[in-house]
Picture 1 (cartoon, rainbow, N blue to C red):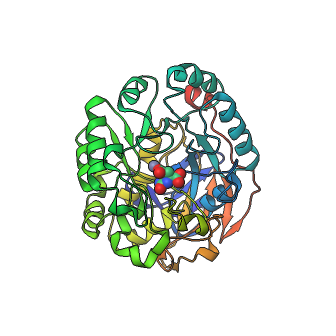
Picture 2 (picture 1 turned 120 degrees about the horizontal axis):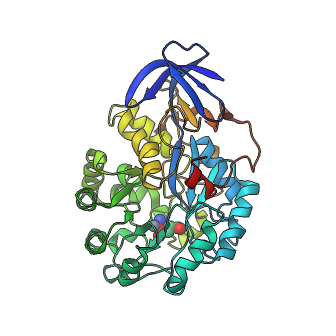
Amino acid sequence: MILRGKVLHRGEIIEAGIEFEERILRISKELNGKAIRGIILPAAIDVHVHFRDFKEKHKETIESGSLSALHGGVCLAIDQPNTSPPITTPETYFERVKRAEKKSYIEYALNLGLTEENSARICEILSKIQKRYFVPAIGETFLCNSMRVSYPTLERVKKVHRITVHAEDPELVRCNDIPNFRCRPPEAEVRAVKKCIETGVFHFCHVSTPESIKSIATSSSTSEVTPHHLLLSTEDAERLGSFVNVNPPLREKSFANTMLENISLADVIASDHAPHTPEEKKDGKSGFPGVETLYPLMMNLVRKGVVEIKTVVERLSEKPAAIFDLKGYGGIEVGNYASLAVFDFSRVEKIKAAELHSKAGWTPYEGFEAVFPTSVFIRGVQVLSNKEVLVEPGFGRVLRSVDKSSGD
Ligand code: NCD
Ligand code: ZN
């Protein structure tokens, strides 16, 4: 197939044709093909989603979460292991990826969970899994919650594999009331990030303070930011009511604004898609659904001239691929998989929870403007056309370890 139109290629918008099968074969200004309205971008890699399933099917399943991702222009999601039961053994890992193979609409990879209990055997567990599957990281590893791990354990395990960390120091986190920003201060994150950086190199999940972004940027570690820490703040507490809690919590407006101004210091933008039902939110559960609105909200910021398209796309595709060693993923390049998302800036929509596909059934961005993709391609196959899904559950594959060694 050949698409022709505006293409973001190596940071520049050019008018060109892209010829592809499963992978991109040719990119050339001379190439004619199907005319595309809008701009052709790489589909996003969301390195941080919680697709729940198992005993939490009422919140989300791999099927519903990946469908939501597909509508948002995400071609590959990295799922987190704090499921019920958690992914801390080869058995639970294999059970989950088997389910993903049957149910996922998009490409899927799964992080391995770390606990104090499995940390002594983590090498053995990981190598068993890696014989078959590509494990992006050990993560998200929590410094503070039910899957809590100590700093010395983190320091020991970092030699085994890449670790992604939820950095909030347990000594400074006092409760999980509504709103939780009153008892989870910025210092909890700043201190945890500092302590981790002193002991080694990590990928820091969903960083919420300008200070953390800046200190990570001057280290060898990498940082991830979420749309909610860029676009929402404690000023939204009244509007959000019992939906306000997220970890790390929303910060003051000045923090969000500074984060957005410094977005080029962050390495990755990810959703931290963490669905809970409205009933559960009333009990103070933390987390926002967001995989479907990740790319559309960022594209709306591009449309308004708040951030550059290149800055966003690098953080949603090239950099995630580089940091997590995802061969064949990243920018629109010959040899990479043809996983593309088309956005038309003249089609601005208001986000409505009723039109999203997560089982959560709500969104913290109700009424926000967004630009959703008009078409999505995964590995050369068109999977979405004007909101119509063209593939079945199970279309998406689970990344296998051969992907890493052979680049295939
Ligand atoms: C996450 C979840 O619900 O799995 N929630 C969240 O607020 N980000 C877990 C977590 O990171 O605390
Ligand atoms: Zn987290």
